[in-house]
Every structure is written in C-alpha cells, then in structure tokens.
Length: 126
Length: 135
Length: 108
Image 1 (cartoon, rainbow over the protein chains, first blue to last red):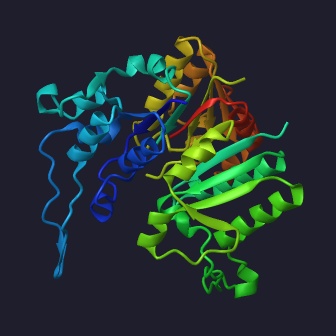
Image 2 (cartoon, rainbow over the protein chains, first blue to last red):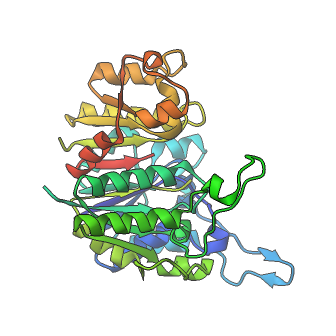
Image 3 (cartoon, rainbow over the protein chains, first blue to last red):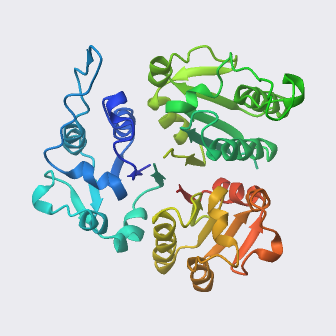
C-alpha cells in the first residue's frame, strides 16, 4: 500500500522537537515497512534548500546540542529509497531555484498532482 | 457492513476546532457500526489525560456543575463505552515519544502507548485512514 | 463512490490554501475522478452567498459535489437561505460515508 505524505507547514516546533515531526514520522513508518514518499508544498518547499542551519538556540544556561537537521532528514529519506518531490509553483513563489536545492528532489508542477496521487493508495496531507 | 477506520489526530485539547470535529466523526463512525482506531500524535496525546478537571466560570456566572465544562478525556471514555456497548473494536494509541516529552503518561484506562509502527499497522487493517493535520 | 474526498477546514479568505484546494479538486476531476469537497469549520464561510468566494460556483459547474457541514453553518449563523446554490448543506455522516467507502481523503 503506497503512501504519499504531503507536507505543507514547516519549521513548526522544529527547534523543540529537534526535527520536523512529519519527516520524522515518515522515516518511522518507512522503518515499519510503509512505502511512503514525500511531496513538499507551501512553506515546506523550503525544506529542499541547501544550507539550512538552526544552530545557536539557547535559553538561559540551556543550549541546544542537536538542532534540527532538516537537510540531513531529507537526504536520509532519499537515501532510503523514498521519492521526495517539491511543487514547482511554490518553489518559484519563494524564489528557490534548482541550483539552491538538495540533490535528488524532484520538481513537479501542481498540474501533475492528479497523476501523482493516482500512484498511491493513501494520500495524507499534513 | 462493519468496516474499520483509522484516525490520526495531532491537536492538543482546547486549541483548535479540529478536535471537536474529529470527535464528532469518530462518534459517527461508531454509531454507524464501524470499528475505530485512533493514533494520537503530538499534542493529541493530551486528549485522554486523566487529571483534566472541569471548572467554574465566573465570567459565565456558573459553578463547576452549572458550567459542565467539557474535558476531552470524558469524550474518549464515552467513545470507549459506546464501542463496548455496540461490540465494536476501538483502539486508542498515544504516540509514546510524544507522551514522554509532554509528561503525558497518566491517561484514562483504555488508552495504550505505541509508536508510528502501530499507526502503520492500524492503517493496513482499515478500509481507510484520515489524517487530521495540525497547523 | 470512492474517488476523492477533499475536506476543507480553513477560512477561504485567510490564506491561499482554500483556493489551491479548489484548484486541486478541478485537477482531479479533469483526470476522470469523482471529487467531493466537504466544507467544515471556518471553510463554510465560503458558502455564504454574499461572500466574495467564487471558487465554489466554478467547482459545482464543473461537476465537483460541494457539501458543507450543517453544524458549522449553524454555528456561524449561516442559514439554508443564505447558502449559495453550489453548496449542499449536509450532515457529517455524508463525509463519513465517503471515508468508509474508501475515497482518497485529504484534510486541508
């Protein structure tokens, strides 16, 4: 049963969780055998950008040891065989060019969503 | 014909209208004779917390009893009871890591701890799965 | 039934999400799928005939079935006479029926 995880919100509690909880969830269900792929849309297309760093978060004497490593999470997903795509229109709106993106991310147009969804038994929007 | 449906919830109580919509849907699913599985992720693990308490409301001019303030744990209990009365399967799983980080381990009876692997299993055993995302 | 069930919960005037979801409905319909758009919560604000949301007329004309949660309509003081013709007030049971029938379901 193939699953497409559509991720739209981004940087939501990522410092507190030291990850994006939906990317994390996707890796977790893939570990349980789910053939899950990812489509980044809306704000989450920014997850495809190289050079993200959340280092330096501290509160009083507390300092974060493991900031979220979104690029690493995306790369790990791709390396595990997941298809990771990002919506072209949303990338363009945000001025994100293919040169600035991580390797291995497919760029798809909104117009192709029908055909994309047809490839999955479950399509979950987060 | 009885089917099984899975719902994934994310919102903590008292934050979003998605919570009450979700409970309305789950209630309807049981009323319609379907088995239900719920995977509570992130803030939703707080929905069945045992120590939720109703309160009075001075702005409303009501005592505790008069205000009859909802507590989602009561809703979860009601769903468990409804499923039992109708002989339907009902499974509420709280994501364990989400429980740990929120200190949300004291839940009402009938709720169990699990992981995303449980969610995947629930999904495979269901005719459909609805993910209700947070924002 | 089956096909697609798109559940829209957001105020159409709050963000682009609503319009994009409507566009998705048309894309899916155009590929030969049956599509139902179910408005819940603040999304029912789009159903008020006097509102400036034009997407729903376009969807209904194209063949998308557009339903709105009666409870949410009443909650927001939108009575049946104020609902645009393109939208059918419905009980939440109708949403459940599509879900139980296996429709690919996306909540926005």
